[in-house]
Image (cartoon, rainbow, N blue to C red; front, side, top):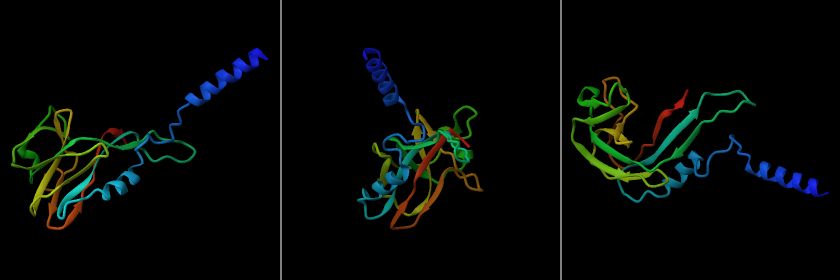
Length: 170
């Protein structure tokens, strides 16, 4: 009886320590984070959104296979510059997505909270956006003219979600 009780105790401890890789980390239900952050908007005009970090194997899979892809909100600084071409930015080494600086005027800077939420009022215009990641500017999108993370703001409220994907495999 003594050994049976010890065995059951050890088995219970092992089962309770099992980590299910199919479940997201708390707060990593990005669709729920987007919905929650939409309720935080308090500015009458400008841009708002969520900064998140995607990592792991994000390749589509056929069930019952699983992937390790997670997309979780992160607290980061978002910088908005006058529209910037890649030729007006200083790369960090040979990286196509990390930059030391943009050689264009900084229009606004805002810190995202723990849920990745940010909002900022900016005048209408054509802009480039970067996220500060490990002291570098992260900009992973461009347009056909070489503009880095470009967007145009005209008026009202505009949602712009930023997903950092450099830790993800597709």
